[in-house]
Image (cartoon, helix red, strand yellow):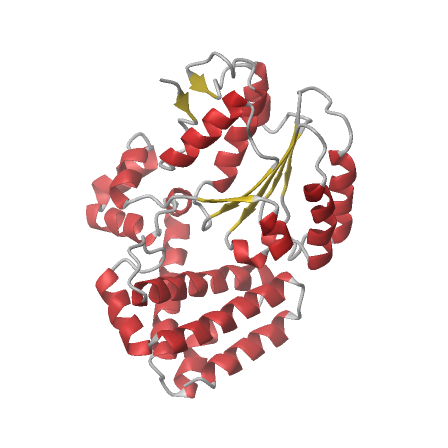
Length: 341
């Protein structure tokens, strides 16, 4: 039996689906990959791209084979027909997407198909998404588009209706520990502080990439401080603490756009956990390490309050993605949340 995408951990059903679709020539032209930061979206999309152009894709026991010239060029970012779009800016504008769209209609240079991977696709402005919609409605032959995002609902309904959604599987702490068995930094961390290492795995929300990032000591410390600050603020917000305490708790929020977007992502993850736990859904938590703690907080807040706070947080994140003024957005978010107390 062939092995599909062995470098991607977990996601067994998705790996089998894409492997068989590539082998059978039945892959759809566009997909949305949804998952938190570090869940492996970029890795998976890149490996699918490698499989699509793999010189041994019809016969290899492992797909992609990883040793042919095509696989190596894709993994090294040197394949002209595989293009990854990424930006540190707050948005992906319409001019960028129009340029991409024009390129999509050009013939492939080297491979039998062209592949586009758009990271943080939720950063596309409404105009940009509408520009992309035109190619999704009438795609050229042998074109594949992968839109990667932490929140698929941030994309237009018209975009979502013309793509297939793939939700990345979050890994259990045991699965992550197995995946990190050969990682030198992980082994040293586990030997030095087994309890801390386990807490790191449990606090990653099942996103292996976050664990790899946090194995750096300084980043791990910074993550721990931010996680603690968000946890404290969420607790005060949802339990109707005095407005002055809520405002003080939100004082840790940064003033720079990328940092603020990242920080709000922590709040969204925490509130998502609480909403789903309140609804009784048996899901892997992405923020809280203790389900008991999450259940207690959720019951104290109630679903209506949780949804209101979640909507305010998502609205602030969406406003920042639409290039809204950072200081005004932060002030409005803080005031609106505090007024709920």
